[in-house]
Structures are given as C-alpha cells and as structure tokens.
Image 1 (cartoon, one colour):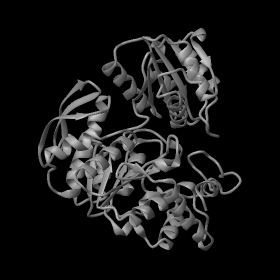
Image 2 (tube, rainbow, N blue to C red):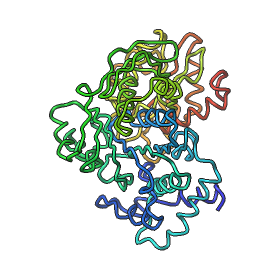
Image 3 (cartoon, helix red, strand yellow):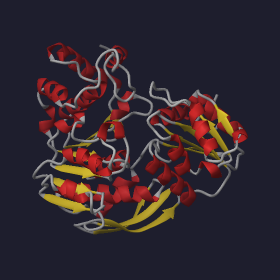
Length: 444
C-alpha cells in the first residue's frame, strides 16, 4: 500500500481518541492487552530488541518524553520516540533521532501489520496499530533506546506490552475519570501498572498518600522528586529559562531550556533524572547543554506569531490550564488577551475556563474541535457567562481556522492570542498558522 491507502486502512479501525467505531464496530468492554499482545507476537516481539523508557502521568508526559529523547540523542544514542496524539500528521507519533518517520517507512510498516491482521483473533484498534508500528520500526532501525509515552493510564494501555527497565510517572491528577477512576488513588493505581518488579521508577509525584501506591509495585530503585532530584534554581531568560538541577549523580548549573513555564523546568528535572537512571552515571555537562538546547515541544506554549503575540498550548485539563495561565503571567508582558478555546465533551467547561482566568481576558472565541467527542461551543460560551463574562465579549466560531482569524480581527497588534483546550483545536490552529507564514500574516 502507498501511504494514502495505508492511512485509509488505519482509519477504518476503532479509535478511542476520536470515539469513532465503538458503536458500530465494537462496544467498550473490559480492558485488555490481549489484542496488542497477539499483534506484537505475530510481529516477532520487536520491543524485546532494545531497552525502553516508559512514561505516564496526568500532565507533562509529552514534554518529558521529548526532553528524555533529546538527552539520549545528545549522548550519541540512536533513539526512538513515540507520542500521542498527533497535532497535524500521524507521522509525528513515531520518531527516530528527532525526525518523524517518513511517508514510505510509515506506509511499509502499516502494510506489514495489515498483512497479518487476518490471523488475529480480534481486530486491533487505531492506537494499538500505531504502537505496534512504532515498536516494529524501532527494531528495524536498531535503536539503542526507545522512549515511549503512554496513551492513557498505564495498566491497560497498549504500550504496556513493554517490560521497561525504567518507568517514569510525571504526576497524578484527575483526568479521564470515565476510564481510570474518579479519585487520585484509583488513577495512581492504574498508572502504577507500568512499573515492573525489579525496574527503576522515576517518580515525579510526591503526595505521601500516593507514593506508597507506586512503591507497592516493588521497583528495585525509586528515584523520587524533591528527595532524589529537584530544581535548585529557575529564572526567566530570552526564549526560555535558565535552570539548575540536583540529581542523584550530580549538580547541573545554569542550563538553558528553550521552553516556557516553571512546569517545564520540573519536567526537565524529571527527564535528567530519568536518563541518569537509565545509564547509571551522570551526564557530561556539554551533553546536558546540547540536549536541552535541542528540545522542541510543539503545541506546548509554542509561539506562532507576533503583533499580536500568538501562542498555542494543549492545556487539555484544569491542571494544565492553570499551568498555562501561570506561565503566561510569568513569561510574557501583560497585554489584552484573546482566548480561543475548544473542548471535548468530557471536560468541565467551567473548571477549564476558570483555570484559564477567562474573567480577565478581553475576548473569548469559542470553537469546536474536529472530533465526534467535541463539546458544543455554545456550551463553552454558556460556561463563560456563568463565570461572569459579558456575552458581548464572546464569539462563537465553530470552524477552528475561522476562529483563529476572528481572534486576529478582535486583537490589536500589542495584544495576545492564546489558542488552547483540545489538542484537536491546537493542531488545526497550528496548521492554519503555519500556512500563513508562521502567523506573520492573518490566517485566511
């Protein structure tokens, strides 16, 4: 198959991310790893051919895995990286040494999986296929290490076919309650499923009521935030932050990281501790400088234009929204702000908008993610009104590119446009802004 045919085949499978296929093709049933295990075994168990670092958490997963991969790459290791969901192209989900898988290779590995599908007991999901494709590709190119981001939770996530020597948990918050549980303890128990007995666990969550849930998985080594690693200094810099770190192996001072927000400094500390745990020795300071300098985190407080300043951020839950608001207040000069927000229906619009500080913005543009799970933008507007926002400060523009264009129309050159909420909104906005020369001209 060529890439178009392969992606058409892929899109014909059940997709939990979009909600497509569950009613007509397969009802939600008991969680299982049976499908991915059978698929990966027929592919020759490629995940056994290289060590892996397995990363979960409520917030910060994608930023952390990108930082981990960048540090491995700077140390000279051939590095595979898989993240989800993608913003613009499915190729983004599978990377090798900071480059997305090319079209021919993606078509090849998907064709390989399609060829064995008839031998499976049950059809795999879209996400299961993409994880199998990533793990197979990493074996094909002979990576030295794979950095794998959990899709959701941990125990029943398709990535949990790994037996990773290093497991990483960024934090534990309330999200995906319809799948993972309604309390932080239940969610922690699900995420703890990636921790294999005898492995090393790098744990960013420090709540004393939560840590024992992870300790019960019997990791051989526990590397705990604030006890074993931490940020020792953190200050703003042009284009990012200058941060110092303490780890079990070393002290690293005055490291520039080209990302915004104090939460990213915390992610960087976690990443540095993780790579040290994997290689069991400190990193050369030049490698640390190089690795962090090369970090890119698309769709996470990413500057897409100036005059007005345009930023996109996939703050998909209340904790992420609050981190975004704090980062904006800290890192950017105060200016009239227009928010463009689109949410999925399982999100609480009042909580999200309150965390974003919607009562303080000049304008709110409510839009609609391109997903069957999208929340009606009218409900987002109603939530804003319930929080005290005047209706005449609110626009409802369901089409994302048109919503971005409307934000430009109502924002002066000295203002800010912040596009956030669902990653489907962020991805569509990013495409529109890149098409308009990186946001230097008004989107069509």
